[in-house]
Length: 139
Image (tube, rainbow, N blue to C red; front, side, top):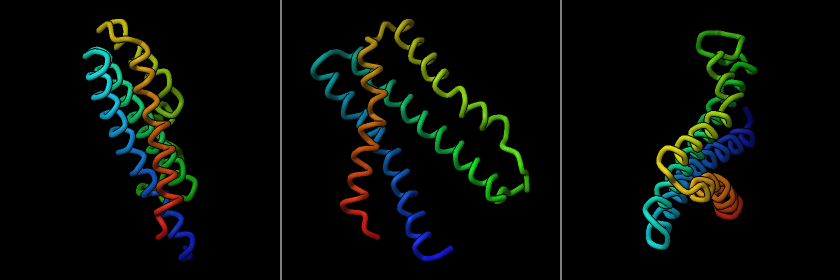
């Protein structure tokens, strides 16, 4: 691996970590604002949506990392196939998130808009994390 490839790889690893904690941070800020401005139920919805967004990102990150390992032949057990659990999560993760959001809204009577707003925390984190990386992460 060349120095340039290693620098790019480290940049993307830092960006992935940054997006992960920024998602939870944006959710926390949104939760506090909703609690102050709207209601406790709205705050719970935003927090739940942000956690679901973070889980989505985490599952996507794990699944793609496993696919890359298999493609490069770098798995620890020498396996040449993607594990069924990784494939399952890659395929049904949106359905699982939608089901969890539905249960949260219906069972706990949380406003739908608050859960959807919490899910947007991942997009906000991706934008802020990428802008920071482009503007200030010059390693």
